[in-house]
Structure formats: structure tokens, C-alpha cells
Length: 291
Ligand code: PMP
Image 1 (cartoon, rainbow, N blue to C red):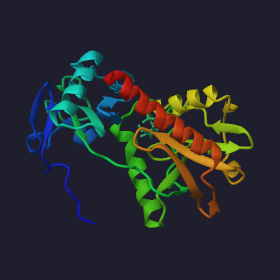
Image 2 (cartoon, rainbow, N blue to C red):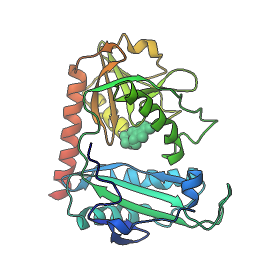
Image 3 (cartoon, rainbow, N blue to C red):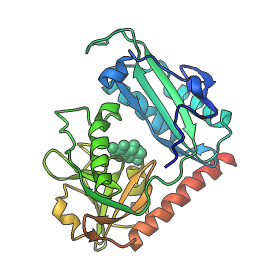
């Protein structure tokens, strides 16, 4: 596979308040974030030049940082404006947006009370995140809310995700199904999970993992359609009895799960409906803003 490295591309990255040429957006090896994972990030998608739920994402970045004990030097409105400027500066319309904030290099050691806080926003074209999604159980459980700041989109929480996803890929699967600390179904390594059984949609309670913005959007789309929906603890064995399984996320959008280990699922009517509704909503929002 020919990889185009992410540090060797054309374009502009918004870094600490100004645009720098893509290849020059660098940081020092003695940055606290690199050693101690004191970084938070966002993942957003623009449709027709408009970021879907931009302000919600900017707010979540600010909130994630607060959970991690630091305050961003930019407010939500400034982050919104910088994101729009980054998309325009790079001449993109349908793209992925990656804001990231981290502790700088003033202090080394676990404590970093006086480190500077940096923020960058990069944008690039990114197609479908999953294709023909098949899952296998993850090699790690998600941490308990008493073991990690589970509601922050903190870089450190993704360590077990990368390891789990690599293990799944080594077995020929697209992603890993992560359970929570009590053994209930949680999510994949980068998307929330739903199952359909009969006429009802079931999804795990988001008290121990990220309550995704796409998850919340898809739940309101389902309610608008009058589809019965319950949030509850789900045992992994229940998935074997499901009629449909799908995942939601900014990168994933709404993606049907086609198999969990050797149990296969069709791309069923509920998943298809919600995929269409989500596609319609993201495009309609873009058209509204453009009008
Ligand atoms: N869970 C995890 C672990 C994620 O990384 C993501 C992607 N941000 C999600 C869920 C879905 O969140 P959202 O819909 O806000 O993108």
C-alpha cells in the first residue's frame, strides 16, 4: 500500500492562531503530550463546505481539555472560525477536520501545571472510514469511569483502541468490538454501536464511553421516524440474536456491521433508513447554510 505520509502533504494547517505551510506544522520531541498523552482531539466532517455540528465539536474539544485539566487559549467561537478558515484556505468542501490540543514542552515529568497549551486544526479529504465492516471482540476492555476520564476525547484512551484494532486486523477483521469494564457491550475503537431486534433499536447507555455526536443525531432521527429505541446494558451474547447491527461516528457516519466473528447480518431496513436519513440531514444542513 502506497502511503502518503501525513507530514508530507501540500496545504495549510492552522497552528496556534496562524496558518503555517503543512510540512512546517511541527512540535518538539520533548512535548509533554508525546510522553504523557496530555492531548485531546476532535474528528469532524464537512459536507458541501459546512462542518456538521461544528459548534458541538468545538465545545467538546474545550470540555475534553477541561477534563484533562487544561484550558484552551481559544474559545468555542474562535475554534469555529478557525475551522471554517482552515477549510476555505485549503480549498476543500467535503473533508475531514482534525482539531488537536496538547501540552507543550516547558515541563518534563508527570506534572505539567505550567506548560503552554497548543491547538492545531488540519483538514483533508477522507472517504468512507469502514467498508464491509466485520468485528471481532477486542483484546482490551474499555476502562471504568473510575479508571480513566472516559468522557474526554483524550489521546491516551486510544492506546487500547489501536492495540485492539491491530489485533482485529491481524485476524482479518475491520475493527474490534469493545466491552466495558463489567463485560457489557460498549462500542468499537472509534464508533458507537446499535443493534436492531424486531422493531426496536437498542444501544448501550453512554455513561462509560463517549456519547458520540453522531449517536445522538441518529437517535433523534430514529425517534422522528417513530422507531422504538432503548438505551440499556447489552450483553455480548445478545448481539448473536440481533437482526441488524450498525455503528455511528463522525468518520464512520452510519455503517452497517456485516458480521461479528462468524455471525453475519444483512444490511437491513432500519440501518438503511437511518443511513439515508443521516445522509439527507448532513447534506440538508450544508444546503441551508449555503442558502
Ligand atoms: N467512540 C469513540 C471511541 C470515538 O473515537 C468516536 C469518534 N469520535 C465515537 C465514539 C463517535 O463519536 P462522534 O459521533 O462524536 O464522532
